[in-house]
Image (cartoon, one colour):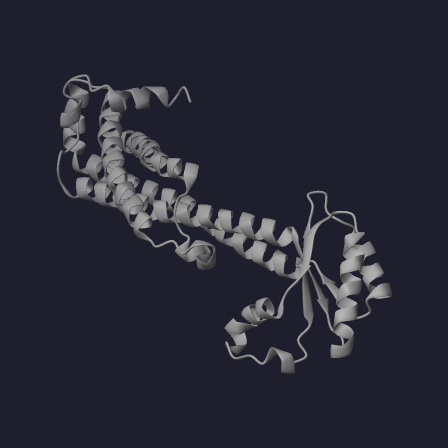
Length: 301
C-alpha cells in the first residue's frame, strides 16, 4: 500500500508541466476511454447478474427449506380417511408450524400450467397434497416418515431436497459466473490500458530522452503517464457505469415469477456496488500504467 501512495498522490496532485509529457489526443486516448467505458458497462451487468443470482439462491433456499409436502395416494373411498389420519399425525409432531390439505381448486391451479384449465380432476387419480411449514428448529423427518408409514400407508413425505439441491447449485453457478466475469473484465481492462500506455511511451521515446537530458527522473515521467491514463480510465468507467445502471434500471421486474433474468437489477444496498466500479477501474489502470511505464523506461534507458 505504501508503494501505491505516491502514484495515487500523483493522480490528484498535478505537477507543473507533467501533463505535457503525455500526448493529450490520439488513438491511445480513445482506446483507453472506450475500453474503460465498455468494461465498466459490462461489469455493471455482471455485478447485477451475480447479485440477482445470490438473491434467487437465498429465496429458493429459504422457501424450499421450510416447506414440506405430504402426498397421499389412495383409493377414492380411502382418501378422506387417510387425509384425516395424516393431519392427526401432524398435529402431534413437534417442529410443525402450520399444515393444511390443499383444496381441489388449489390442486387444479398447480396442474393447470401443464394440463390446461379444463382438467377433470374428479376423474383422475390425483394424490391429495398436504402443505406443511416447519418451525425454525425444524422437525424429525425420519421419525415423521416412520409414523406416516405405520398410520397412513398411502402417504409420502417430500422435503424437496431433490429439488432444492440442483436449484441452489444452479443459482450458485450463476453467481460464480458473475464474479468470474468481473475478474476477466478487470484483466481485459488492465491489458488494454497496458497496450495504450506502451504505445504512448514508445511514440514519445524522443521526448522522454530529452526530458532525461534536462534532469527529469523516471519517477517524474512515469507519474505523468500514470496520472493521465488513470484519469482517462476513471472518466470512461464513470460513463460506462452510468449507462449500465440506467439500462439495468429499465429492465422490467416481474417479481418472484420472473426468475433471475427478469429479476436482474439492484435492490436496497445493492445500489452501492456500482459506485465502486469507476474507482476500481482507475486502480486497475493505475497499476497497469505504472508497470508498463517502469518496464518501457527501463528498456529506453
